[in-house]
Length: 521
Image (tube, rainbow, N blue to C red; front, side):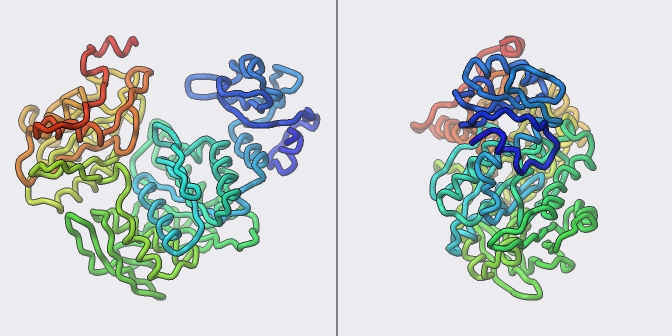
């Protein structure tokens, strides 16, 4: 495509003298630039992409988008916000694929991936040709594409590339999980959403957004985007689906300007749950609204998954026109989500579970769900990430001290922070709620050893929960990502515990290095 043609439907101001060069791809990493690419230079938290323009040109970039008022080459185009421009330039490059799809956006602090998978499963079960882009992977016509080591919305040009692949594959619908980072960094601005769903908005990413109000505002951009979605040949539902039970409801209810519906466990919700039943193998309830009543059965566990099922049901039935009975079958057919309350069973006489809970609210509801699954003790293994929201450290330890019987505090992506310092902050939180170190909580810096330690604590009928990593495939120490999978670690630890052949514990530098060594590389 000619570079000037990318600006035909560009919604912001731009120079009129766009170089007339042909673009064969878009890159934001100078190391990934191929001959013929457009390189988009953006400022990041620790680096300025403009510094890498010479390298991008050396690697074959034929044009550069960067900040206005700067000049690096004859084919440099300056715009006010390169990061925001990237979204629209990528959409134009791929032919605005979202305008050819019905797009369902899911946001929230916890439950986004589960709710996205529920909606996707409902659509597939109803015979709809649907795809999904989540923080775990992208599903396109039966093909699963990895979207990265750590959890965030894929970069803008990758999102548009995935959408274009879906159009090419003949899909008609897509479920797109969106994070607050994705919205604040404009990664999904050109996705033309038709249905918007929120799971909840609780404490998370205060390091990025500063306060709850800013965080909520980033999430709310999904709902304001409904107002500017262009008419599509297949129609525009433009439905907002809100959680009546969440603290965000009052704000969003007044904020949303499109048609909206609420879901919840109480009678005030438009779609509500009645006769809820929990067990260690799943849940069941009756979903009721003024238009239908349908019995829901799911292999997911915990009250929070009743809420996720209601969100998916409301979006699918009222936003996408799926028959309620078909939606119920889609929910029942979902086996589970990788790294979400995923049981690891090698024949032990207690329950071992890996879960992604990495926020205060997620840990709270996960521990509450575990409590309902056993008459034994709940043993929690978790950490708190470095260079991220520091307030979470104390809060999560406080929650575990109150709701778990035993807590093992350990590493979770310490990055360049002191792991000992992070664990001390967490220990202080546990002590503030009556935790006694060495009796009700322990500090075990190496995550593999922490899981082993928790298994040694377990008695018959207990539940051991390893929280915070879930499906993720790496852990960051210093500036290095080490291959790590909590599920593999749990299997390895259980094999050792049971004295049977099994996987080897994945390597982390805490196994054989002092902290100052890995901090300094």
